[in-house]
Length: 311
Ligand code: FAQ
Image (tube, rainbow, N blue to C red):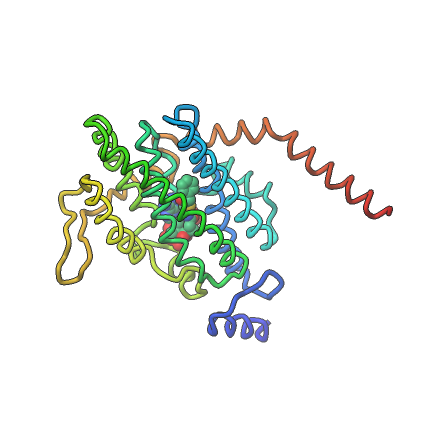
């Protein structure tokens, strides 16, 4: 055991990757299953707010782009469930945890998408925040998660651009379109900042995550990085950040901001956000309706295996 632990610590120390067949402490495995499965659930539940606008996309082009983006998110969910499976947990078990309210998914997907500009705001701000977090996770210590992140980040960059393109059209459009764009920024700005999680001082998991190099940067560091990158983009659009205290500190080169509403954050992650019930009900319903697809896929795989083994 001591020998195994020393080998594990040496890999972490040298910035090398831990692979599925390597020995790892139980706590490391559990920590990863929690984070990776919550990440997977976020990708899949995150398809719902955007799916809400698929039938109302304003042009064939925007519908095609949105459809491709939503399918990408489903694909990210699949990569991440596969990463979790390499840690000896089944996808079914993880989905059951989600349905029973024992697993979380990102708070931001519990807010409604009320106008077309919200689709722009999600791509730009939500995927933008996800990229900042995930670029950092490309260097995470668990090999399959790290490699998954590289591919996911490439696709998220396209998502961020499609969102910003929508915002440019809206911000340069009619007075009504500009108002819709500002309204979307007003509603998604703070939820996007909360995606990074509680302040470092209140973050229960950051200590172990940094020790094991699962997380490479802290919640507050990444949140600030996102703010500094995004405020100039808001200004470029001619829109305003919905925070009267958001201003550049010339000394630090970073933007200051108002305190976040952590009561709202805790309500949302504990099931009391505007859309929590709808999101989970919808997932449960679709999971049940599509049971036959999973059964057919398993039956087909088993049949192919039998045929191959008898050749
Ligand atoms: N929402 O101790 P910490 C995307 C929970 S992907 C809900 O700081 P940690 C792509 C946390 O789980 C977005 N819960 O936790 C897309 C813990 O609860 P627990 C998802 C949150 O793990 C775009 C408790 O609070 N990305 O958007 C949140 O060290 C568009 C204490 O927190 C990832 O999941 C939250 N925002 O740090 C898809 C990235 N924040 O488990 C579709 C990977 C915290 O003890 C459309 N995950 N909590 O019950 C991470 O980097 C980390 O897990 C954090 C949280 C940073 C999310």
